[in-house]
Image 1: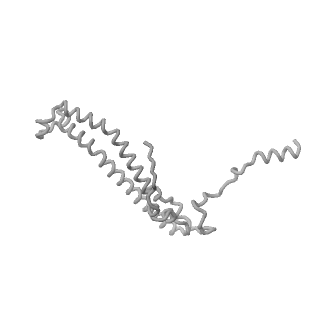
Image 2: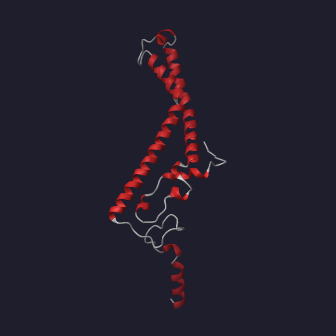
Image 3: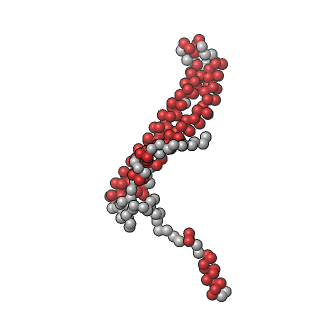
Length: 179
């Protein structure tokens, strides 16, 4: 193998992506202090606790919003299935007035079936509503990575977006949700 062939072989086998990066770069290099200074161990733990607490609060807010939307939208299904199970003789067989006079076993079975048939489209509607609302409020942008606690001078994502979770920018004019 000649020297020229050996040089061509080395140039072909190396690529730009094969170089090792020592660590992940920060999310936004603009307006950052270069080089960034690491926090002390106690400061890092305190900021980590703050970031975890904020992420937990955002998670609870998302869970509360999700539960309230699903409860309101699925309320008709819940009521219909509840009355169907309550008045059926093989399940609970309540002694309530409406179970004795209005609903017999056949109508209670019809209510149970109707409730479960209505459940699927209502779940789709509730999911689409939650996704649309979460996107408009930009709730998922409120989550912050724990790497923000390691270096001093790293700005919070909500600060860069113009307010808490970007809500100060205003509502988007066009929101699409594929169902």
